[in-house]
Image 1 (cartoon, rainbow, N blue to C red):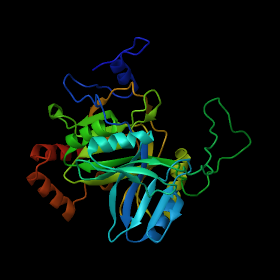
Image 2: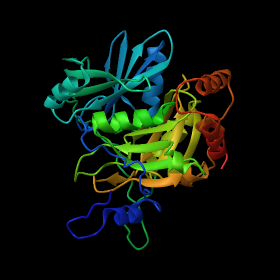
Image 3: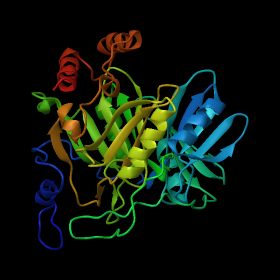
Length: 381
């Protein structure tokens, strides 16, 4: 449904000018819930298990994280911004993603959420304390909603370089030498998940956590069947929020795709990438600039094959901006940069991927042959 701003402009027209050539057609998914249980304020952190915390810490420092806390069984990682840690890695038998934790805007939101979902509020194990509600989303991911106690203090920033642009000469009698060092992480930006039950999972995040959609993607020739990917942000009202805090797409598997961490600027991304390359890490895709979200990006694999992204200069939207709609395609992933790699797209065949496809086509979910072929077509378009 279209809305009108106080200045008389139509929000649907405004969103087309801002970020998408297409808006919703009549009857399509509105991209937000009429009466959500709560409205989360942001991602708090992501949870992983890994068998080797020493190796995980080496990569974390090389990638640009700071260490907030370390015990024999847990590694808490942070950025330079004040707030909560942005990742916890617990010692486990295998390397696996557990799930995301979202930050509640107010302590009372946890009570409201617990009553609505039949769960309980308990003490959190985050450094500094706090309270948490544990949920399970329709895909099977454990989802925590937390209200943290003590906040981590800010750390020194990696300063952006002064740039000479056109006739605006900010740097005179000084050379430009970005240091070859890790791209210092500022904060956790977003996580991307794959699911076989896309519509159910999407509605759950909108209805339960009050998130709203920035952009929908659909399969070419199958728009009438609904979207197959959504870039979802927090609803902070008139306060600008990241274009996406969570992104989800339909696929034959259920799992983590990547997570993204903000750094200072393009030089931080590039110099940090050289630092990682010199230490033998594998770049998955980059450097480039995305279309949905507009951020500069650079994707890397850690020693356990998890994909992590350095990003900078992403879009920020208020609640006024309605969802854009666009077809899924590999060419539509970036405005500029090298072609998306098979590694980034997850297009390299593997026994696990074959098992995922067979299981998905046999199961009670949203995958069927038409959707599968549509996804394959999008990956090659």
